[in-house]
Image (tube, rainbow, N blue to C red; front, side, top):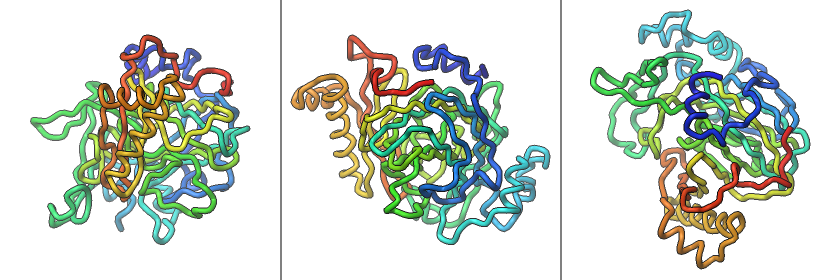
Amino acid sequence: MSKNTLAAADAAPHRINPRSVAPDAKLLSTPDTILWGYIAANLPPALTIKPGQIVEIQALSHQGLTSNKDPESFFAGYGIPAQEVLPDAKAVFAEVKRPKGASVHILTGPVYIEGAEPGDTVEVRVLDIEFRVPYGVNNTGPGKGVLPHLLKEAVAKLIRIDLERRVALFSDDIEIPLNPFMGIMAVSPPTSLGMVSSTPPGAWGGNIDLKFTGIGSSLYLPVFNKGAQFFTGDGHAVQGDGEADGGAIEISLKPTLQFILHKGKSIKLPRVETATDYLTTGLDVDLNVATRMALAEAVNFLQTEKGMTAANAYALTSLAVDLGIGEAVDIINLVYAKIPKNIFRRNPPYCFTPGGEMDA
C-alpha cells in the first residue's frame, strides 16, 4: 500500500476493501484512451472489467495543454524541468485535437463493467490516489468563479507539492494539507443528451468537484447505458467547498478504484459515503432548487436505507444533517446533505446492504 492508502486505512479500516489494493488492470492515459472536454455514451471501451475488479487509472490534468504553448514550454516558464512534464501530456497535446465547443477536461475511459444495465447502481470505491507530478496549477481570471468581475486579467498560479509532508506550498507563509480526489468521476449520460460537455455535472456524476470523494470513499452513480461506461479525470490536490475561483490545485493523479455493481438498485442522483458520513446531492442551475433536491434525497435515503418515516426523516435532517455547497462555479450548482454516521447505533460497512451487489 502507498502512504496515502495507509493513512486512509488507519482512519477508516472498514472503508478499505480487505483484499489487496493491487489492481486487476491498469488503464493508461494515451491519445487512444482519453476524451478531451466531453462525455458520450457507447464509445468503444478502453477497458472491460468484471464487477468487483480493481483498476489503476492514469489521469491527466489539462493544465499546460490549453494554451498555444506545448506543455514543456508552458511549465518551463514556471521553472519545471522537462523531465517532470509527463510524456502523455506531450503526446495528447501533439496528437489530439479538442472538439469545437468542448470543455477543457481530459478524461480517461470508458471502462465498461460487465452486467451493468440501466436501472442499476455502480459503486466506485476509491482505494488509493497517487500523485503523478509534484506540482499543480490554480487557474482563474475574468469571468471565472463565484466573483467573475473581481479580476481584470487571467492568472495561472503554479503551486508546488511537498509529497513527504503532504502539504501544498501556497506561499512562504501558507501551507495547505493535501486532500487528493478526482474532480470528475462519471458514467456515460443518457443517449438522448448526445455529446455532453465535461463542465456541468449531472445525474451521471461528472464534474461534481466534491472534496469528500477522496481515499476511502464510495461514489454511487446511477447507470444509464449498458456497461455503465466510466470515465475519470480532473485531478485535484486540494479544494475547498464551492471551488470558489473556478479551480482547485489542478494536478495529474493516478487513482486506484474498485467497481461494485448493485443490480436493480436504482438511485436518481450521485451519492457519496465516507468513513464518517453519508452524503446525498442536489444538482441545478438554481442554488435553491439544488438545496431542496439534496434535502429530498437525504429524506429518501433515511426512509429507504434506515427505515424511517417521512416525518421522522425530515425532523432528523433539521437536527443533525448539514447542507453545504460542493460546487458553485460550473453552470450546474451542487449542494450536498451530509448525514453523520455516529448518530446511528448500527451502520453497515457500506450503505447498500449485500444481496443486490456483485463483487468479485
